[in-house]
Structure formats: structure tokens, C-alpha cells
Image (tube, rainbow, N blue to C red; front, side, top):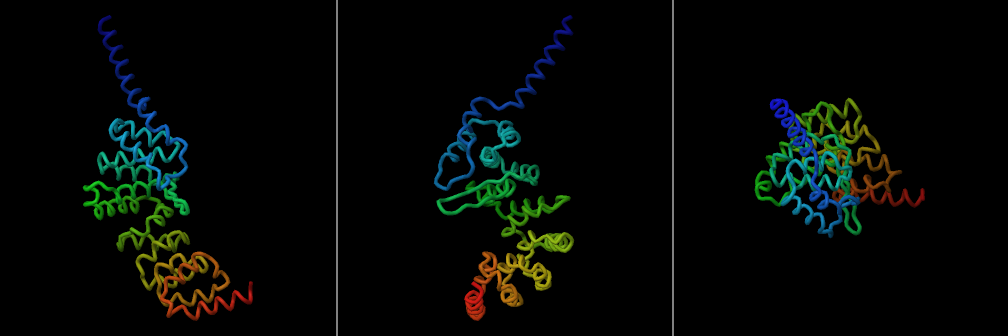
Length: 268
């Protein structure tokens, strides 16, 4: 009988421990309560920073992971991610790998600007642009770690590569993966990433995307692309077209601007 009671108590204690491990304390829930209705992070809003500090002081590692796993609101997830990374930077790479295909996005806004990034990109930015001294010192090394995880996936997340293209290391390995993916899948979302390498052998491939090529031309800025502006003059009011044209020296585009002006007079 005593053995039975002892065994029963062990089971109850174990069960209780498991249940507690999967629970977020009322104290932590109260801390994150103001974030539940967030639809963006506003530049002048100091509340997220206050909440982040409270979580860092009072929430457990397990609770922070549960907030990321269980809460639908991505802004709760984002703050929990910041705190986990500050506690231990190795958390950043585990989180990035775990949520690399997450469709959650984080919106940042000011009075007149608005930008949305995917949750895994938020993890990347939270680490790379951290104010923590250790993370500042390891910035380049950490950047490489993130991209190794990204390009080691069985199925490349093209949306994430496109968002992170500005920080893409100029690695032959990554270049090959990106180019092969574009050729195989005709993925225009990878054109900006391809343009980072500025390989003249890619000029024909970029041109083959026609009206969609200007997003890459803006970054590449090779004279071989100048003919594309006249070829697609009919879309000269397109933002990507105008932005790409504006990247060239005025000495090379003066005549093109005159042609656009004359075209618009006749056709508008």
C-alpha cells in the first residue's frame, strides 16, 4: 500500500510539473496584456521597451518560449524574441531556424512611413542591430550564421531572401543557389538578391524578366540595362522603373528623361 501511495504521488508530482511547464503565469500575462491589440510598432511608442524590460526581469525562459509558440499576436512574439535574444544570443539562431517559414509579419510605422517584415527577418534584425555590446562585436559572425541557416533549408524561403538581400554575403555558394532557383522557378522575388553579386553574366537573365527586371537594375546599374528604360517607356510612372532610372548618373539618363517627357505629352 505504501509503495502504491508513493508511486501515485510521484505520478501526481510529475504531472503537475509538466502542466506548470506549459503554463504562463498570471504575472507574465498581465505584463504582455497591452500588446494584445497591437497592429504595428510606432516609432514614438515607448511602451514595448517598458514591457520588454519587465519581461526580462520577471519572465522565465520557458514562459518566453510559450509566448512565441502560443500567442497569435506577432507583437507579443516579437517582444518575447527580443528578451530571449538579450538573455542568450544563441537563442537567436534556434528561433530563426524554428520559425524560418513563419508567415507572421511585424509592421513598423512613423507618421508617414510604414514597413512590414517577416518574423524570421525580425529575429535577424533584433540580433544584428542589438544595442548589446556582445552582439555588436559579433555582428558579422552572427550575420553569416543566419545566412548559413537560411541557405541550408531544403526549400529556400525566397520571400525571406528577398527581404534580407541587402545583408547577403557575396558567397559563391549562395550565388549559385539563387541563380539556379531563378532559372528553374523563374522566381522574380530573387532578382534583387542576384543583383547584389553584379555578375555581368546575369545581365541577359535579368533582362529576360522584362518589366519585372527594374527591381534588380536599380541595384546593378550596368550601362547594358539602359536600353530597358526606352523599351519599357510605357511604364515610366512605375515606382521600380523610376527608382532604377534615378540610380544612374544624370549624364547617362538626360536623353532618356527627355524621351519620357515627350512620350508622356503624346500619350497622356
